[in-house]
Image (cartoon, rainbow, N blue to C red):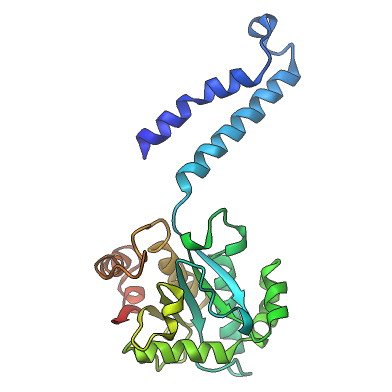
Length: 259
């Protein structure tokens, strides 16, 4: 990585000086031509951004809202869902709102990534109406969480939990559960392989953020984790890494089942 970065950065002077018209006076009095100086600055900025984009592309964890007609999004390299066993009530709505805010703040929208769906593991929040999910995807803010929680797609969540049970995992807590399949269409397999994280024991916003960061942090950038399906040895190593990086409490929420 360092060697690649060095090689790309060595090209920057060529980009800069080939992009600005040569002027002998400029070299003796660099402040004579402010327009040229600004042009150099812009070219340099663009070149550095191009280097960063080149090095940062890879598998990314992302999010999207999905209505019944968009479920499951099978074009993605892997597909996950944030599932609850029941819709929010007056007794636990505050907890659902915390989960929603943690979700919005922890994941980048799939529509804002310069990557093909095949290079994303998207984590979906199910919505019970396609029109509402489309509006949420167009620009989600934490203020939208009232809409998100009120329109939670319970039927899609139930399909996901049933798939997890067929894989051999029993998500019997209050949720939320993060459940993922690779490829996404395997959600309907008779015996799917799933990666999961059970966040039932968490109560505070900070705990949900930490759990979601662990989920995305161990997926993002690993091209070999879920192509063409789950790499079980790699996934188990990732779960061990979660314990080292995020602590045993969060690591104990992770698991993989099925196959």
